[in-house]
Length: 221
Image (cartoon, rainbow, N blue to C red; front, top):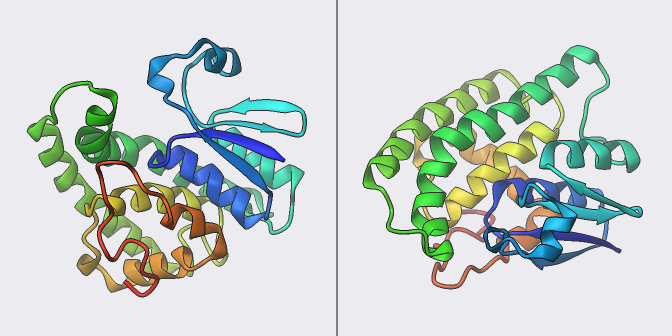
């Protein structure tokens, strides 16, 4: 059985969990307080970051290469398209969410509201929260535009791009920071993806001191 060292609300860990679930790979989840820099964990990943996945006799770090490894090593169902242009688009959008969205939104909302308290790293910065609340509107509108021109974010089929986006949005939805009234198109996309069996363990997450809103695990919102 595979082992994933993770933090429940980490979008990078959630992305890996979604891929594991979609491919029906059994995996033990071990919550890792990576900020404490435990020596055993540092031996697994000297960068002191999650996720870390132990699978097939390997210890792997960094969510993007982990997900692409899983898609190549366990090809059914495929989460990457065949064409080179289509694969580029998936990678572009994965990078968009893991870099731009994460920097502008996730770090300013989730990390300020939750991570600082969990890590005992001080009080939330209201300026960062205000910035994240403003920037998420732009990202939601961009996703809506994509979905008005495509069946899924990167094209006609569900891909790693959808899981990257859903991982970030689900983490923010846990703390009620996604305005689902902004776009019915986006809400319908999220309802489809969160209804998948791969999403079940994520919807069951509970973080001490931070109860999710009632709609969080409701497949019909």
